[in-house]
Length: 231
Image (cartoon, rainbow, N blue to C red; front, side, top):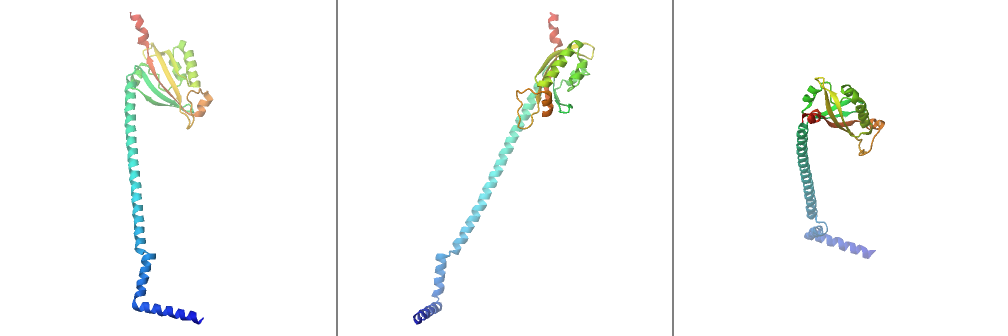
């Protein structure tokens, strides 16, 4: 025990001498530089912070470039769609007949979707005909000899969603019978995720699915049928 006390006294005496000479502070500073580099720690943290901000900036720039690319693609597709619609409208307006489309809803109500620029001409020739009328309304304008075939084919088209093409005589404004060709195609509005291509639907299925859109032209072919009589 006496020896241990002597060692402790020697250590305390050496520490006091080091403090008095200022060497203890130098030893402490060297130890901090070697084992606790505070300046280096601060430098590393600033570098991490800088890289973090740089990463956020790069990410923000990438998002902006992506949005600009999307806007450009949307603009190109919109322009292409507008051009395609203009071409379709020009073609429909130059066809020799009334081109139209209408929707029959599940509750059997009807709404006109579009028609070409020959509607006024058609209404002047057949004032009682309205785009989107049910076959029961149209049949009143049909020649009695053509009514049965017209009703049968139109109802079959509604049941099976097949193409309806038929020539019949319609009563014109001047009291004459004009031969008109109906070429109308129904297309169902499918429910999301369900395909109906090529699948015939019955009337109950048709109404359970929703609305059906009918597209097609009506063409007055009376002048064509009269051509042989002129020679």
